[in-house]
Image (cartoon, rainbow, N blue to C red; front, top):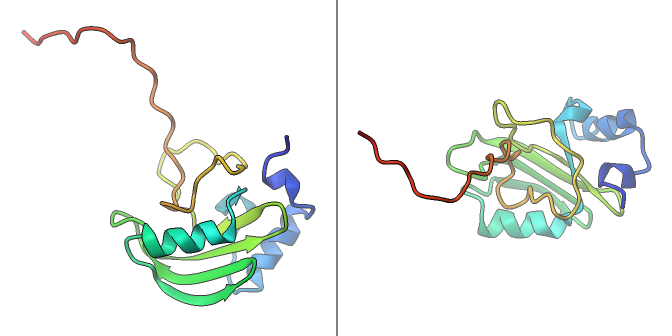
Length: 134
């Protein structure tokens, strides 16, 4: 199964140029790729985000929002979700300091609800009794 980035038949430069048409200079590393639909982002904006921001474009396959704040501990930012057929490219995913490199996602990478890169997964710990402090 291809990841979301591999399902977009465009070069990295073409994708970056597409976002430049909206007035944003980004690198390919600042764009998240997902199998989530544009509607997933519309729904999350209305039901889960802290501040929904100003809706600038709301079309089939395109969502452009200014000054959104998905979580209260995040900065406000502009968010654009563009559908390229079988996958979406998203500008505005919050990158946590120290987060691992973003993996090109599919429907299992859920950016829409919180619009942030997930931190490195916590290491599993063995189940058992917790030692008491002396």
